[in-house]
Length: 120
Image (cartoon, rainbow, N blue to C red; front, side):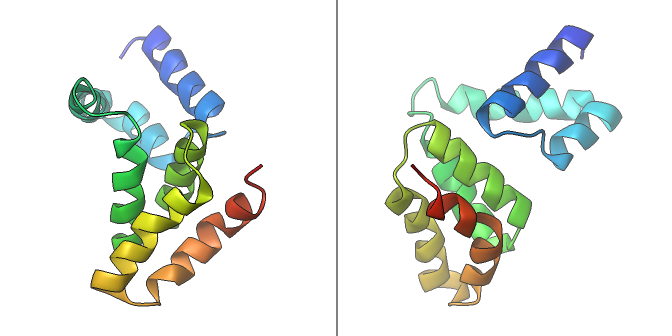
């Protein structure tokens, strides 16, 4: 990964979700090839599907795992890409309904309640 690649990637995260997630910082530092392959895998999908599929799927995945930082990143990405709050809550509640139960909403509350309250 070149220094320009790193600046571009960090800049994209800063301007889109407001910070660079720890997972991205770790991969930049310790295994940039892995990060580039992960990004390429996701980006290839969106030649066919709309980019909004990414945060929708991320919200669902992070609800199942209870990953708060991932929920926060996903919600902010969804906001940047034109979601309404209802479309952020939909995959979260869907995963809670089918797989986790109400306890799944605790991580969502911790991670994104303030984002939903200040969506405007």
